[in-house]
Length: 122
Image (cartoon, rainbow, N blue to C red; front, side):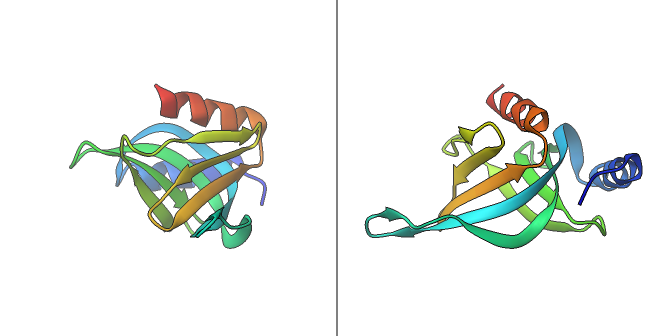
């Protein structure tokens, strides 16, 4: 799925309902790796893809990664807590740990990936 200006406008309208946009509207595919006794298992592609944004929620002053599908529905969100380390696996793949394992975002555009990473770190 390639993003168009219309996609950006639709997601921007949807984002306004949730909080303040920090960075993103970047096209990603979501991968996961489950925890196993000897570390994490192999990366597996999920059926989740769409536009990921880094947001600040007005109501509880927390930060979130939110993933919107082409219907502007939130299909994945995770609250960012200080314990979450958003790690650069390579120039277009970034991951973080959850309670169940690792989640990875494969970005369509490397520049978007770097922008998201820098916004997260600041």
